[in-house]
Image (cartoon, rainbow, N blue to C red; front, top):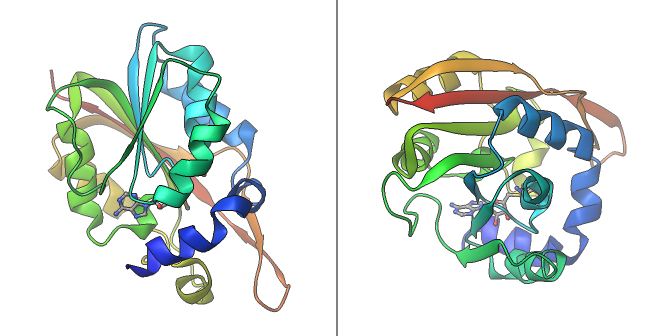
Length: 209
Ligand SMILES: C[S@@+](CC[C@H](N)C(=O)[O-])C[C@H]1O[C@@H](n2cnc3c(N)ncnc32)[C@H](O)[C@@H]1O
């Protein structure tokens, strides 16, 4: 089992509490608003975990599909989203999504990219399933130096430079790229209980029509 799968199997039942220290509902809702989706939109969330982003998308969109490689995280997501018949959840590797080309109006990925083995491939795969004109919205950490997060939180990447994200979006065929700060910062406690603030970006790009 990969480090990421082992980690998320261990923390699945506590994830909603852990996540709230990193990424708030206000930050999520601001990112969703920025995407400017129509009420008829069919959306996907990659690395959906316990379904936090999908919960925010339900009131604003018509159909929501979550993908995650962790059966344990999806088990909690199914409980969190049981009341919503418009939601579908699939256990899947994000580098090879079981979804047709050109099938979603928007694809979201919150705090997923820094866990992926090959982020450019992950972005290319998310772009593949977007309809022409559809939007990719990634929220993730800016580049940082908190190397303990590799061992403690199974992070493969210590955030990303925004210029790199911009290059990867272009390479995946996305245009109208806008990368900005998410509302607020991401606060967490280090293993020594020292409070640390990390910044988060929201990157939006559009698939060519
Ligand atoms: C930090 S959590 C974020 C969960 C959720 N997006 C949220 O905001 O609460 C990262 C999620 O990505 C999933 N993940 C990591 N690598 C993945 C991969 N290669 N394919 C699919 N899911 C993956 C993990 O299982 C985990 O649920």
